[in-house]
Image (cartoon, rainbow, N blue to C red; front, side, top):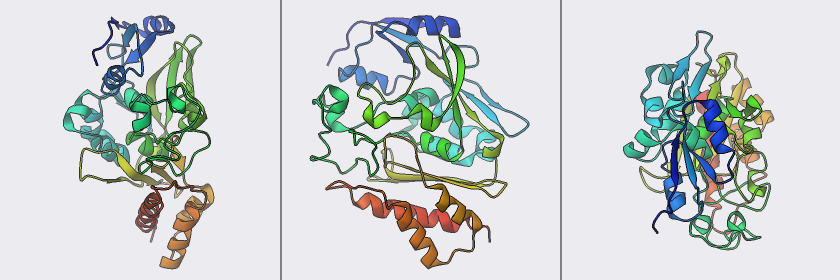
Length: 323
């Protein structure tokens, strides 16, 4: 389908970007790898695309001496995957960035755009009247749902397609948002709060607001951490289930699953605490992996994801064992 005409606006600074994005028909542009597809599929009809890539510091990857980092919204996924400092300090993030799509997509795609991308559900993308597309129900719930969510707190059963989001959740990252009221910081769970209940989008971004940076705390650096992704194909595919795990330098453990929810999904803190204790035998690991999935509600065709998630969890528990 041909694209509708639009105005291209390269924002010169944050104030210019916020002013331009206050228009109801304006949309932020990063690499455009998801936005272009959404425009072709007539999911969005922007009159203005506000390019954030020229904002001061938007492409910067700043590593601080205390172990924290600030990653500009327009930092490319390929740069995150190749950055030696990221790979050394936050290998889970480097691995997740390297797992995204194809080399071409990683070269174009930005971290801000990757977090803000829309679900890849075929009902939504196909223009059918699902909950996210003007309807009242999730068509996947009783339809074709092989790749849909195991956990949902609302109507939509789609999953978030981002690989880096899973790693950033395990690393306890936050996002810096810039808007009409200035700059604020949100946790990832707050950014995606109510995503499956919100028909018009997944994030809590206000009008005129955009993701200006991803912030990693000092506790995200080092320790034992990694990202693992299961796919239907061997490469260049979205995750059926993925996992990011981090045993911090202070011994605390964080585990996040991808491909199972429309929001970042953290394994419960009690399970993370048991893993942090270490010394788990195989029976204990099996029991914890099963317990982590107690609240899963598989649909008719996606029950296999429960087994995949449990397999990833068992591997993570053994790998994070401090012995």
